[in-house]
Image 1: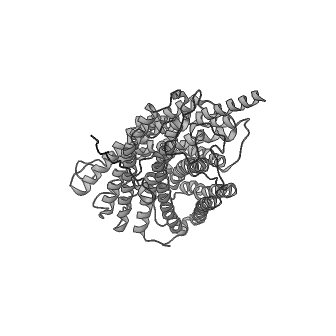
Image 2: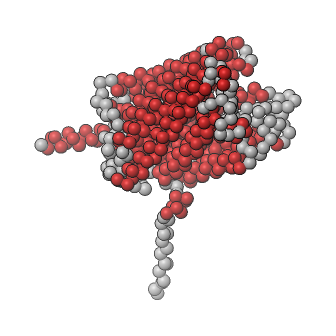
Image 3: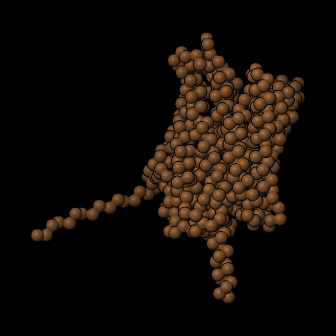
Amino acid sequence: MATAAIPRTTVKPRSGILEWLTTVDHKKIGLLYIVTSFLFFLAGGIMALFIRLELALPGAQVVSAQTYNMLFTMHGTTMIFLFIVPIFAGFGNYLIPLMIGARDMAFPRLNAFSYWLSLGGGIIMYSSMLVIGPEAGWTGYSPLANSIFSKSPGTDLWIMGLVLIGTASLMGAINFIVTILNMRTPGMTMTRLPLFGWATLTTSVMVLAATPVLAGALLMLFFDRNFGTSFFSGPGSDSAMYQHMFWFYSHPAVYIMVLPAMGIVSEVLPVFSRKPIFGYKAIAYSTAAIALFGFLVWAHHMFTTGLAPILKVFFMAATMAIAVPTGVKIFNWIATMWGGRLRLDSALLNVFGFLSMFVIGGISGVFNAVVPIDYQVQDTYFVVAHLHYVLFGGSVFGIFAGMYYWIPKFSGFMLNEPLGKIQFWLMLLGFNLTFFPMHILGLEGMPRRIYDYAGERGWAPLNGLATVGSWLIALAVLIFIINLFVSKRKNVAAGDDPWEGNTLEWSVASPPPSYNFDQVLPVYSERPVRDERVKRQMEAQSKT
């Protein structure tokens, strides 16, 4: 007796915006992170331009004092939590599975959820500007952030947004750790893991250890504001405890933002130097050492709060000691370039920008670590200069190096090199015009966070110079955006491996297929693609 066949059902593949809204593909999620973070970078940059316009001359210029405080708070929060941290998560999402020979992240749905949670946190945070926005500064110190001095619900929205963003970071960190430890292709031992993978793994461990402390501090602040508790303000409270909890996260956060950039530098330098990385294990292990020291130095932000002398000595020594593993990296990178055949494309130029600016920031950091000097420069523009040389110099130049290096892999087309070089030199010039004068302003006594200053203090010329520099940075970013559109229109094909790279992402098509690999190359060293290229060249020579 014949039976009716069960009708086959097919799922129509999603396309267009619905595909991006529902995707669990690590590559698409990575691009969502990168594009979203870059848009927040533009928003934070616009706020910075208003801040610099206001400070260009004495007297009120363009915004009120209240608006200035809101812009200052949102600028810092945006650049840290909505640009630098998530854009490195975007690079990691796209590249880590490709680098280790995996088909996807360990938890694809958790990966998608962490992105949308991060975006939701950013939207909630920015909704605070629809009312009177947060005005206590990006650090959110209590009592400035309590309900007496910051009465607007905008501060509550700011806290809720930050907690959601932190939760998303925790989810992403767990995903990266499991992916890197469990999903490497056969042959890829930890000493053959790409150095960007080492940086991502170490950063994820730091996120896992530090973020819950910040979330706890923010929730306690929220309870102080709304439910009458007195953790940080009021009878029996301790406002210094908030600073301890905040900086226990926020100093490791410096390395959460810098270590991925160091990983990018460690990938770009050997490719554009035409040499293997010098001291692979030293760079990998120094990454872990930096992460460890990063949790031992938080109170150097608090030398003026009345710490016991023995604690000041400890944190001063620990802060100086962290320069050792950082110096190991710097000298290994210099040794990588030494004797190499340097290819001075935009990616390598941005690596040079990273190295030079980050070293300047590190040197000023050693000055800040000395307690008597810190007493003089604490809460002045000297600290602002140091912060930006470390984070802009140490993160943003690294990000642009990664953009120029991997956008051909992401998109399938090459970026315009002349425009890229113009953009780099403009950004380097604008960066130094903006932030180097702040060292001098700080030594002259200009406090940070101020909305206005007296003309007779003589700070106007250097502030005007810094404002000009900020607009050069804005022009450089605009040129980068123009470069993207011009390159897309010209559509010069990148090919699978335009740079003759070393790591597995260069063994697949540009952009990679949804399944990543037909077959993963065998891994016998930390440079599997280069090994395969040499093997083919030797086979071709033997045939001739």
